[in-house]
Amino acid sequence: MVIISKTILQTFINEHPDSATALEKWYEETKTADWKNFAELKNTFNTTDSVGNDRYVFDIKGNQYRLIALIIFKVRTVFILFIGTHKEYDKINAGKVIYKKWGI
Image 1 (tube, rainbow, N blue to C red):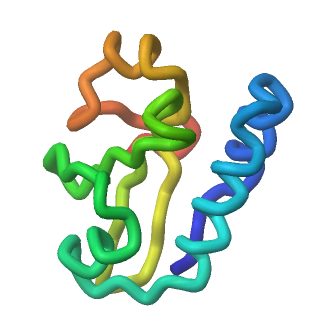
Image 2 (cartoon, one colour; image 1 turned 120 degrees about the horizontal axis):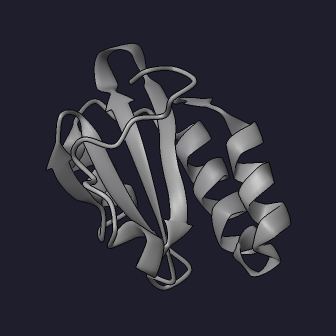
């Protein structure tokens, strides 16, 4: 899968160094994946939830952090929309969250 953008991950890791190993593992597994649909994604990350609008929530580091991605399976692209603590995640609408830079 093509992941947009690793810079977002690195910025978060710089602010939350304890997330580094888990996020780097997520990145590598996602990059090498070739998911065609949500069922295939669940085979890789079985705790992932679909929240509508092509958005998927990943538990990171034992659910300490959450990552929301917009995934367009037919073009093999993953847009990282949000990474935050579980507390920060609880304050947003995961199905409608956008990354302002991309407007998606």
